[in-house]
Length: 412
Image 1 (cartoon, helix red, strand yellow):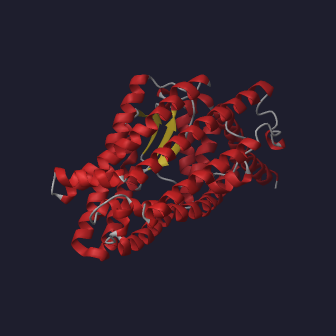
Image 2: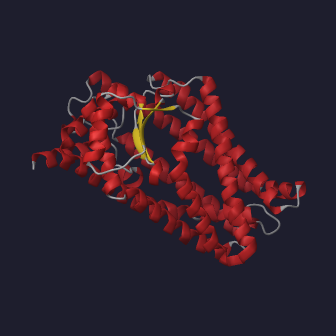
Image 3: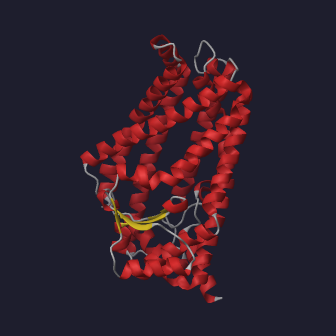
């Protein structure tokens, strides 16, 4: 093992240790009293069920983390990535094809590792607690379609970035950032148009009380959307959701059919009022700008290291390799990503509170509290997460924090 490989393995184990510690901290708070603001959300039997659900997911997560890290360390120690790269070079001399073959094998290995846990999570854990509505056929098709779409998008992006590198050398990062930005904008614009229909059926919300109420809310909030759609989320799960998607003339409101089934009209409008808050505060554009800036920083740093022989050698390579350098660089960024995660989540929680405040200031506080409680109770969410877990992993305030915040606004 060379020194850089030891560092990479140490970083993999560090991330494992941090995530395992966070799970342990959460486990220590199991059985804690339900916060006063959430009294009555669960009765004793429902609370025991929620605790069992949390325990089952923690157990699954622990096994998944351990097996994934063990396989990752084994692959790194044996230089398997380097062997794959060597094999790609024997198959073809075309650099772009080498990249595409490597990425396919890399993603296939990851899929094989993750698949048993996804299957168990869907057909054992989610099934046991009454959430799963997916069939084995739907699950299999989802796996195949997700693999193909993810591979094609990843391969397209990496090949374009490589072409920029081959053309400009270390200055490639400017063009690479522009390519990444264009693809990000395209995915934001076209997600609901091109990606979602591969997995779900979307139909316009029919005329009626709910559509009329939403259209009035859209007009009152001064927003513009091309259409209101209902997505058949019930094909896979009983859990509910709603979101806005798209940019320009392709902005859409998307409601899960499970949300419509579980909520009153006022509660659905309150959930959308929260989403309108994000829209009015330009949170999507702010998040996109932050992501692009960080992407630019990472690409700039990578531009200084991409030609290094040490990065490929750490993964078992025997010659300069763009894809091995990129993969090794990703491992080395682990501590940076871990440090940035709490900051990003803190900014996200702040945006969520502002969106809640927007909904409350427009008279939807009580309905939003009711909706949040229903969504949380139906999904058996953890009501007493450890503060360290919230700080590190939560993009939203806890349910208790959101309810108390909304109630304080309503009472002021």
